[in-house]
Amino acid sequence: MPVIYQNPILPGFYPDPSICRVGEDYYLVTSSFEFFPGLPVFHSRDLIHWQQIGHVLDRPSQLNLDGVAASRGLYAPTIRYHQGVYYVINTLVANPDARDSVHKSDGCYNFIVTATNPAGPWSEPHWLFDAPGIDPSLFFDDDGRAWYCGNRIPPTGETYVGHREIWLQELNLKTMQFVGEKVSLWDGALKGNLHAEAPHIYKVNGLYYLMIAEGGTAHNHAVTIVRSEKITGPYELNHRNPILTHRHLGLDYPIVGTGHADLVETQNGEWWMVCLAMRPYGGYNHNLGRETFLSPVVWEQGWPIVAPHVGKVLFEGTAPDLPQREWPTQPAQDDFDNHTLALHWNFLRTPRQSFWSLTERPGFLHLALKAATLMEPASPSFVGRRQQHINFEASLAMEFTPRAANECAGLVLLQNDAFQVRCVVTLNETGHPCIRLIRREAGIDSLLAEQTISVSAIYLKVEALGQAYQFHLAEQADQWRALGESVDGRVLSTEVAGGFTGAYLGMYASSNGKPSQNVADFDWFRYAGNMELS
Image 1 (tube, rainbow, N blue to C red):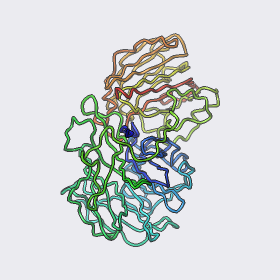
Image 2 (image 1 turned 90 degrees about the vertical axis):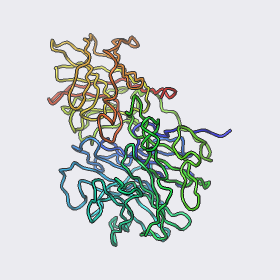
Image 3 (image 1 turned 120 degrees about the vertical axis):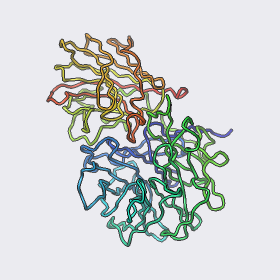
């Protein structure tokens, strides 16, 4: 019986996947935008079971996300391996008012980090001079030369809004700087194409293949490809382009926006593609962000055919011809018994203060209340994880006594600083502890429900069934009662909130702009997705 795999292989906000193989091991990285640590790294032996082994950028010295706006930060990375060294090349997108004419163009800083172990540690960034645009990639040729390719506005300027091209330049690996001239390669297959980006170069049977994304990373996303006898071109058009898109399948198709892909050849000679795509639900809304999917590839008459016979990414398919390797299942509940946070937890932007601890009170996540809030481009006292399922349940146990009306702590579902849902303990107008359920849309808060409480140890829970998010509270374990009506979850979708990220949920503590010495202690956090319904 053939083994069947399920898509997405990385559910939740894991966009812009890049993959490489080293022997029998596969490594994959994805974008992370304003979240820290940056660029999660995954390991697999069979391409369908993945285990996170670290982050590329996990030290503040490597990654300055101070003040970056939502959906800026770390864009699409590429991971490659060459002569015993792993390379990740990436773009840090800063705020548009940033000014540095040396390293960046239009707020885009491109850099390379290296490691001898993909789990880390990774080097400090090697910043690239005169590297405009985003989505850089590396190619190591048979003759030992290394090449950078990325996207940019054409040197002659945009002939229309969104006009981009792919460019190439040789890279000196010793100095990590460019040599030679920049070469314009291609601006996409579709006439009037938007946003040629995500370039990768491969060498197959002596020919160079340049694969890109075009059409923008939304419903019109697509993957196209050209080839050449020389890396600098000219490149021959594939008349079967695009080799992957779902834009012709309609807005009600369950997988949309396929694009931003990378190819890998297995040790058994099979070819596979990883790409991003979205799963809309509750109408054309995707709360989970852009996720990582897998699809088979065959070569026919010198060109790759994605998902032969069907031509689209499926929810399930026959697994690669590789030995199955499953990893230990991550427990649904984190009891915070270790001295370090699990790899799935993230902060917002670069944490510059020691606002959390797992040792101050063993068995608890100890969160200090910071003046910073989730309603601004700051680094608040927030520890969150991705929403990875359409239907899920998340709950926590917290001990917190607010000392002033400005203090709060609790459970938050977050899309960005202007779109979120907060379920927090605070003080009401009469000075009594209460729980408030607040929905924030377009920067405006709405109080949906409020209930007074009589204990400092509280349990909070959210149950999501599609776009209906029902919150609950309990003053004693498992004695849940509903907190207001279900919340319309579309406030957490990209279509409503904008941007490039997916929904997060986690623990939050704030003094809302005022100094505080107070803390919130979280005993455990539980997240369980319902795969059958998702």
